[in-house]
Length: 309
Ligand SMILES: NC(=O)C1=CN([C@@H]2O[C@H](COP(=O)(O)OP(=O)(O)OC[C@H]3O[C@@H](n4cnc5c(N)ncnc54)[C@H](OP(=O)(O)O)[C@@H]3O)[C@@H](O)[C@H]2O)C=CC1
Ligand SMILES: CC(=O)N[C@@H](CCC(=O)OP(=O)(O)O)C(=O)O
Figure: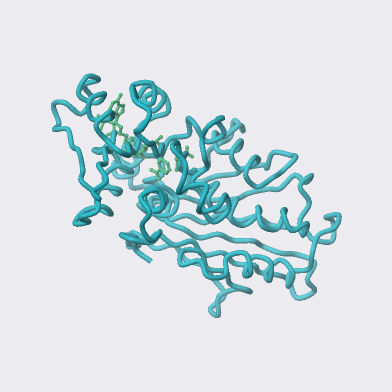
């Protein structure tokens, strides 16, 4: 059976990458609107209601408005925006943590934010296993490629090639903090320090831990073992113990689209300090790859179909 898909916001950064991942796949038939009609509400409503699955790649307000256009009981939704990530009636589209069946059977799926994907993947299994406390003020340092800010930030970094690093989120209350707190199972919101570097795509999310100060925390070996067991058999998430042999992580400007997620547990020699590190493509597992993974599950297909791993 062919699943009819409408990508609302198909001309944007995330929408284009989803279309690339669906190209040439006969299981899906894409409903498209030409340039003149892609922002026409009548045409969008028609496309939304004709689709089996609509993938929203829009700003938050436009995503809420698009959901309100659904006038049937069947159209399913994957929303890439922040609008519904902690909303009632929506399933958070991180199948590894939320459950593959929950995503496969959901009508409304909220695609995770890019930074939260790394953070939750690192923290949720460890908090659930009781190896890290829920009631702890975690600190999250992260860098993103500039495509994370959509067309506007891409244009800014392409216009001003002198920017070497951009720290932001300085007013606190970044829009990703609620989903990070909720799905990592935390009692205290993490302190989030994001930055952008002059590479189109790529992301590193790091959570430093002083284990000796943390009540009930496991050993570095226990943290690694719990993550490795949790993601055992995942075709998308890998878990490594220790630093890379050359002692560094690099993000490259030439990086290609990648839909995997690499987690590392790195510890000091005496085992008192740990750096939990997640590496991903903000446009891959951080956005478009995650949307296609959820779509595959919702359509009853292998979860990695069409992904670059
Ligand atoms: N980029 C990333 O790494 C990630 C993005 N996301 C989320 O995905 C969503 C899309 O982001 P992104 O692709 O980066 O953003 P872009 O700005 O690149 O694209 C958004 C697209 O939506 C279109 N659009 C805006 N309003 C409407 C409307 N009312 N009707 C129809 N189309 C509209 C825009 O049109 P126009 O071209 O005319 O401006 C644009 O093509 C956002 O909610 C973002 O937060 C989530 C995870 C990661
Ligand atoms: C570099 C950059 O600006 N990144 C975006 C987040 C990108 C993302 O995950 O998108 P959502 O808005 O859908 O959550 C930011 O920090 O707002």
